[in-house]
Image 1 (cartoon, rainbow over the protein chains, first blue to last red):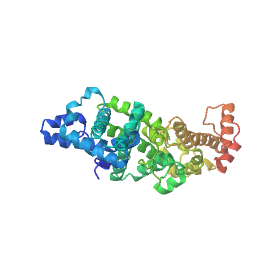
Image 2: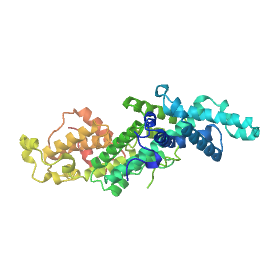
Image 3: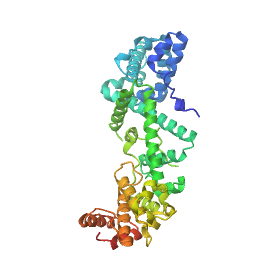
Length: 246
Length: 163
């Protein structure tokens, strides 16, 4: 199984937003394709934002997202306004979605739709602080990054026949993060993976943690511009997650 | 097999995973089984095959061919163990103690370190450590207080209360 494309996380460089702009030079169709791929990567996070921060029903959120993506791709508005110097594409996209939603609410009000419908389309959001508005979106994005990282690491271990490395990571690192699930005991690990000595077991764990750190940086490196930006993104996502409750 | 469901895991769990360097360390219940496993490990797996430096050492004459195939337990409890091998075990354990991501948890490495010194003292009447008696006794008392210490090593350390 190829390392890329897991969980719908399309692979850099074809999806980095600055390259979408470049794709535009090949013609509108190439640009639309590239932008479509890029946006699809952010859809789960945007959907989470609409449901948790904007209080939309899931079906309404899907409708808004579908219109947003179609509209942005067709109108090319996103590319026209995007400027790498303005900040992260993730933030830019969130702002664009919020504006899109606001316009949609205004349009509907203008068409004299019911107050209830307008309410369902996110009016409550105005009462939330900006940091809270972004929370669900960033948490969902972090979740997507981690899911992609775990998926790629597992695939890499399987492809290389390193089942013990993945197994150690799963038993010692992932399992204890699940509530009420203790780490798998040492004796069980030895039986399961056939380690001949504690050194072998420890080496497998150290290798797993290093591989995980490398894959995580590789995934983030597909949308962050350099090593410093990767580390900054890891720290920021960690902070967002740590401050987001249980 | 248990795994983290990252689609439903809470943000705090995911935060830990975002900086996973400190995750996965061995816990107290693991120390006893790790010590037992280490004692059952052939010396050659951790010390390597017979090394040239050891062969050229003045004491190398006490290491019979194939002795590296003994387990750590067999060496430590042997009535006449090769001192050179005990010295190598001591050095291996000392090296493990100083490495955060080392092959052994520091507690197990410390017990192995003390056991090698004790075996040399009890079974070969030789000192392979520069520790003074106070430091030795402090170390032995710490080891004897560990609930996961097995009976054989406990007896060995109990019999060498002074260097």
